Image (tube, rainbow, N blue to C red; front, side, top):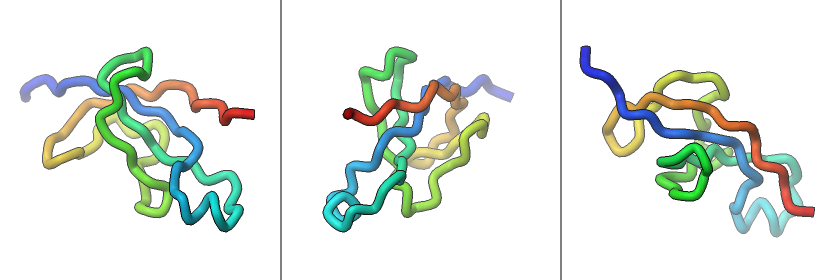
Length: 78
């Protein structure tokens, strides 16, 4: 079996305008990055689309299977 390319994921506060406008609290999107410093974003998986659970080792994005390394959750801005 070929080796999968690693991407990095973490949960971040949602940027869904409707949820923010309605005051929905505590919703988190899963955001995928190319680097462990979380600077080069690949994709954002919104909370209402059943994002992958924390701890999954693989995920399919854009028809490709990737190895996932989970980073600590982002702390919301105060």
